[in-house]
Structures are given as structure tokens and as C-alpha cells.
Image (tube, rainbow, N blue to C red; front, side):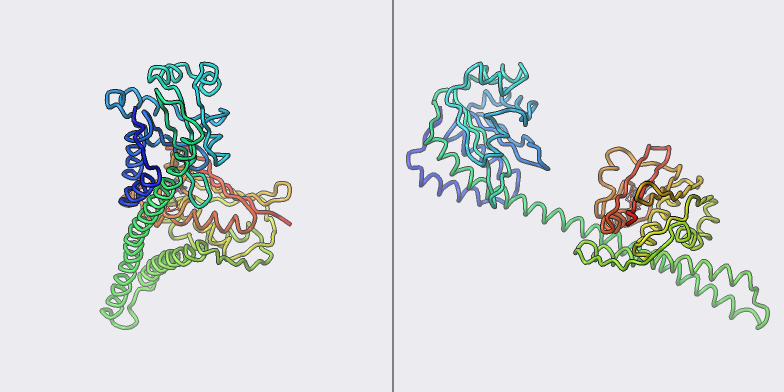
Length: 410
Ligand code: ADP
């Protein structure tokens, strides 16, 4: 079996050099696994912590003929209930050595027979689970297995040293990838945002030019009031859209940088909803959408401008994604909170998308089909949470969507 390290210090120095040679996350993981099976073990597995749970990201066998079999470990992610195994090494931030793998131990760490058979088929004798640490946090665990050597405390210290170096390399590659992803999201957002801003602006300019040319062409006194009024209404709608987009853009930076300051005053929700509805009148008329507002005129102390913005965003969405079907807004008082529901019978949102729609720049629809910046719900959530409230969604594809906003009454 490969256990070829003669000079440990030199090996670790060499490993650090190799590990720092790539910023590609996947390459870094592959380098670590290869380093281990070429020098320290017959078998290596890497699990990384993602949102509190371990994800298996690499499995490597020193003998290429056994790689196919080893890959089957991808089917058995670590179980957090297991003692003396991967999760415990992660939690305790210290390596765990299983000097001799016994059937009893195997039974306690694996509830699945197939997995136990796999360990036996690979003739594993000894295991070490070493935490991958970076910035004093566990980011994963490296498992090494040997089919001949019985690992001891010295091996554990050595693999711990290697895991520290590997942890830093993985963390660095991860941070780099996150930064790259964020840059890409930002670039995509900027491209969509400029396109979104230009569309209503172009229509607004065209409308104004057309209105002016109509006025200039006709002898004074013969300008039809209805024609001009309708054209100005069109312009007003485009200006509203522009204004909403710009407000959203400004708010993304305000809420993302934690600079959201609430200016609270007493407001009545039903009155506010009705006031907002007036601004959507033309849009509702054109899309032949019926919007009904009902319920109790619950009074509370909130930031009027911000709550107005939340409702505006939710109504905009209900119209945009509502397939021209009726929309119902209901305001209720429940215990010590005000509850507002905005219900549409439109396209609905799939289960997977529901988990992300409140994230920044996340959209569940294509830009070609539906215009939007993907920030409305993100802003709404931040505003509602800043008030100590909650926003939730219930939806079924093709059936419709209901957003529920809860605001504390104190
Ligand atoms: P935008 O509408 O600009 O994409 P939002 O943050 O307001 O951004 O919404 C995020 C996503 O949530 C939308 O892209 C859409 O997929 C989904 N969504 C929001 N409201 C509704 C709704 N009423 N019906 C269906 N889908 C919706």
C-alpha cells in the first residue's frame, strides 16, 4: 500500500506548494485526493459542509482497478447520527482514528448493508477522519482508509496537518468561486437592468414625441382632449414603471448594505392598498384584470413608504404573472399581527423556484417571456423582516400564487 512519506515536513511543504497551484475548486479537491492516495492511503474520501450538511465531493482509490467500486461511496453520504465517524470529526474539529475496523464498529456507523459490504469488499482495515479546517471553522472532512496499515496517533497528527493545508486551499478556491459567481450574477443583473430601464424610457420618449407632433399638426383649438389625455396617460404609465425600477435598484443597495432605516408612522392597511390600486388602474384596465380589496382596515405603526413598496411589488407581480385572472387582496387581524394576502390565479411557481425567489437577482421565469430584475421579492422580504414580520409564498404551477405578509402589531 502507498505509505511512502519519508520526510513529513518536506512532504507538507511540497503539498502546500501543490495545493496553492490552483484556484479551481474541483482541481484543488482532485489534487488533495491524489496526494493522499499516492502517499498515505489506499483510499480517500472528501466531504464538504454545505449549509450544515455534508456533501460527498471526491472519492479516490490508489488502485485504479478499485476506483469504480470506490465510486459507489457517492451513493452513501455521511449520516449525522453516527458516532465516531465523519460528522463527529467535523463537530469536534479533531481527527478520529479507527485503528481496527470491526464488524461491530461498522454496524454502528453504517445502517446500510450495501455500504458495509463495500467497506469489506475494499478490504479496509483502518480509517482516519480528519476535519478540514479554515478560519477556525470546519469546512469538511477527509476520510482516509488503509487495507494494510493500522493507523495510529502519529498518522492522525500527520493527516491533520495535511488537512489544515488542504482546508485553506479549499477555502481559498471556494471564496474565489463565490466571488466569480457574484461577479457573473452582477454582470447579468446590470445587463438586464439597463435593458429594463431603456424599454420604458424609449416608449416614454416616443409617446411624448407623438403627442407633441399631434399638437403641432393641428390648428390651435382643435386638439382632441381625449386623444391627448390618453397619450399622456400612456406616458405616465411608462414614467411610473421607470420610477418603480429605479426605486427597486436604489433599494437593492440600501437593503444589501444593511442601511435600511424605518420611518414609522400610523397607517391603515386597507386604505393604503386602495391608494396603491389607483396607481394600477390603467394597467388593470388594459390587462382586463379585476383586483378586489377586502377585509379589515387594520392600523399599525410601520414605515408607510416601505410597506407601500412591498405591496406595489406584490401587486405588480400578481398582474404580471396573473394571466389576467382576478386578484384578491385581503387584510386581516390575527392575534397580535396584521395579515395581508395577495392571491392570483396565474402561472404559479414550481417548488424548486419557491425556495429561491426571495433571493437577490433570482427569477423563476425567462427574461424573454417576462420582464423584471428579480429583486422585488428580495426587497419585500428585507423590508418585512426589518419590521419584525414575515413574508411567505404558497403556490401551485398553473393554479396561482398567494403571498402572505405578516406585520406585528405592537
Ligand atoms: P421579477 O418579477 O422581477 O423577476 P421578483 O423578485 O418580484 O422579480 O420575483 C422573483 C420571481 O418570483 C419571478 O421571477 C417569478 O418567477 C416569481 N414570482 C413572483 N411573484 C409571482 C407570482 N405572483 N406568480 C408567479 N410567479 C411569481
